Length: 106
Image (tube, rainbow, N blue to C red; front, side):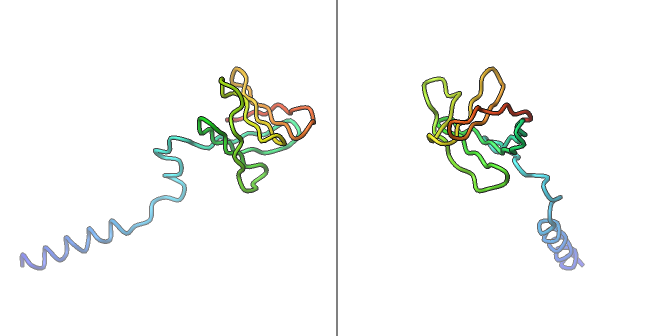
């Protein structure tokens, strides 16, 4: 009887450990660099991950690009073509010489 109980207990543990968690429930959980989503006034959608010395930015769902921090404050990130600026919690996005677009979200 004890042997059957042990087998049942082991089977229950195996089933419990193999169950899938709710999709998306753990996305970002414990991640020190969470992704923040923004929508800019020009319609651009950004997924931004601030990594200290750089920002990883995905534009409209494309592969993310790394933008190095410019200056000691770490509030402007640019690769010379794309620029992400954060001033007093307000984010803006610029491409090339175009006027940067204000973005909201987070």
